[in-house]
Picture 1: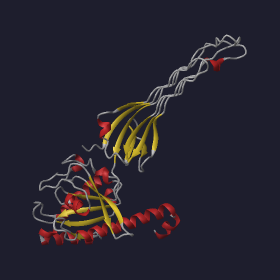
Picture 2 (picture 1 turned 120 degrees about the horizontal axis):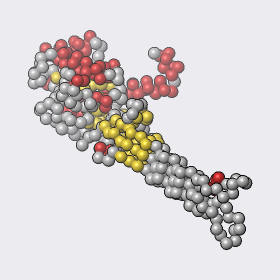
Picture 3 (picture 1 turned 180 degrees about the vertical axis):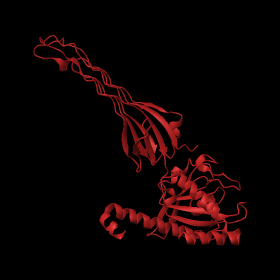
Picture 4 (picture 1 turned 90 degrees about the vertical axis):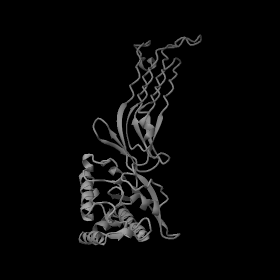
Length: 353
């Protein structure tokens, strides 16, 4: 099961109480107070991991509590600190405060760590309250309460390229053709019920490069209002660099106008927001081996007017697939170089526009 949303409650450990004690050794005539401090409560820590690719382990275990600190003891012995707990989340998880909606952290790299809830400080024992005029104090401090928070977790897959389009336009067949991914493929709509990732290699060693493609479940008109599978999976292409928009140009779809299909999906992307409709895009005429020539020509003319790269492919026969694969790879390479330039040499990037 693919789970990409979860709500969890975390509670850090409370601090241990300070101790009230006095020394009573035989050869210590003026023992005085000897109450030790309480131990610190354990923290709740979140850590990104490449070994996890879904949030399903939080679906059935939504509450997590760290160990409390032990109480202080006599002879100035400090109580043991509570053990921390570490919650593993997939790379690409965004953590939001459920109450305020504020983004707490976005895990973009493996092995990143944050303290999701901080353990309470241990209370002071009576040894700390002794003064020259108050030599036998019985005061002590209770441990502080550990933090308690409720978080909403959202998993957004990290991919370079996102495949979008109506259901059954050939997205799953394409990703299975250009990568080792094995999504479910059938001749009826909504066979893809969860996102699929595939790694595509282009070029020859030692100059070989690769990029990650995300195939999301198909969209239909009104998806932003909940039609079909809705837009619940569109978050997985928020971080992509390039979108590949597949449009069926055969007569099998039963939809007469490929340009109208293109505009519907673009409208759904725009309704979702997050700049999806503004990302670099390639238009792909799918099922070109059985294409209706009028549909193919109409879609190609639209792409030319919008100055969008256009490719006609058949993922079944392999027609045009290699050309598309390398064109997408070139786009991804150029955008990666641009991002590096923007990050490392912003002044030069500004001069180049």
